[in-house]
Length: 304
Image (cartoon, rainbow, N blue to C red; front, top):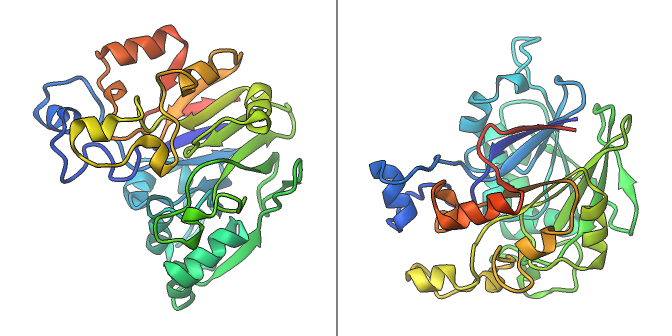
């Protein structure tokens, strides 16, 4: 199984267009050692030809230009993307669907809650109906219920409801009991049995989520914020990390502490532009390195 990181940043990317925090200003001026990043999305394949796109960020066209493996050029119009899985209905994970409208109907796998959001409250699916159309494949959410993706051999998937927040425009924003708001994904290689646990939005690691993480050969999880008060302290927002559904890396019960016992590869993704770990020479980045935790970057490839 090959995993390609198409985008590794949180919403807004890095540097964010209207932000002059120390990170964004520093990378623009070349004053810090950091790599620009587009908004988070990955692609997975078992044969290097047929791919599943997981989330479609607003930066999808730039990301596809940087990923020639996803364009096999077998016909006048072609793509290696056989299907798209959405883990939530957030704007930074779904707006890119509009950029993929010039072709056959999109095969989209998502929960019924996400389908509702993208039909009624942010009607991307309705708009696409006037262009290419979509075929919706509902995700099973029962514990242990896996699914396969048409046209993708060698990979199996399991949707794992996780604690986070629904999109701000969604009625599910304030309905923590709806398991369809946010999911993590277990992606398994059916030949080797190895798996990756992917969850870019994770506010808590409960027992079920931890069990999936512990069994995975690699975890790719929420790296949005270093501290809970990061944006408040910088003066860019009045919201704390927990207010918008993200578990910070540092502090008691933070992501670093939750990842510490795991034996597999540990990778942070969906990194906000304010997070000091983007500065490769920061003490926070050094702390992650000592803990054996990697920071994803655009173009990163992982093979399991």
